[in-house]
Length: 321
Ligand SMILES: C[S@@+](CC[C@H](N)C(=O)[O-])C[C@H]1O[C@@H](n2cnc3c(N)ncnc32)[C@H](O)[C@@H]1O
Image 1 (spheres, rainbow, N blue to C red):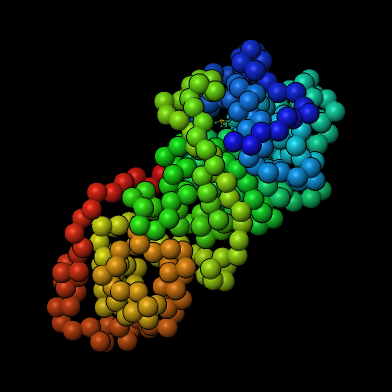
Image 2: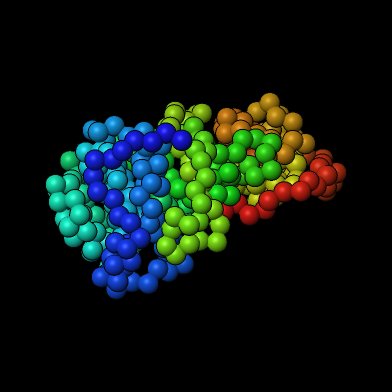
């Protein structure tokens, strides 16, 4: 673990409880409100995020401000998007009280981070650093990566099993939709585990840190929706062969097979073995196989054949988070 000392002040358990009382809130599970009460954890998150002092950081879910203070000490500006009105309203006061010299570098947006599209500030955000609300962590992360292409890198804290899923590669038992879609945008890696006791209230399971570095998508961005539709279809029935899993998406099993062959992929392969580049090839190949042609080539009874392509089931995690 790398560490660095932060110049700014950080909040401990007593301050966090007092701030919750002042805001008149009781942490709720629905909004994933587990607040970090340990300054060393904040130091670790900020150090692992590899921020430079000129960065504009986007923070999702600032809560009572523990991480916000650390981010203000390590960057030039922070935009914090919070869904809970009392928390959003109190954050500027908290920064004014504990770190007044940084107050002018903070913007707070009261909004659902899974929908936000416009941010205030003179410059666009360059990094995302967040202790994400656990129940919406993956959709929020994907939305931010899609909506703010200026976000080049970041570090997010999520449930440990979601961290494993995001960082998983093809063939892993936990590889799934979050892994492939996150990899469309960025190189993703796991950067550590955080115990339960650094939070108030303590969650039931440990958390994981996930780092990402944006990279160019495997094919043109304009194809993303189509590629994501293939990924969704392939993992909706992850125990089936791709020919069977993609038959509805393609319009028929025969067309799915033609598309897969055109993409250089065996129709009996399963989606969990493919990386984002292979899914991109499938979406590209679909444009070259007209629906009517595939239907014309399909022999009577061929539809039922898909069952014979069914691969033997393997133990797998169905929950895609
Ligand atoms: C795990 S807490 C993190 C709080 C703080 N950053 C910390 O580390 O102590 C998640 C925060 O996200 C907020 N939140 C939940 N859903 C949200 C959403 N859809 N958009 C923005 N904020 C959300 C919660 O109100 C809460 O403040």
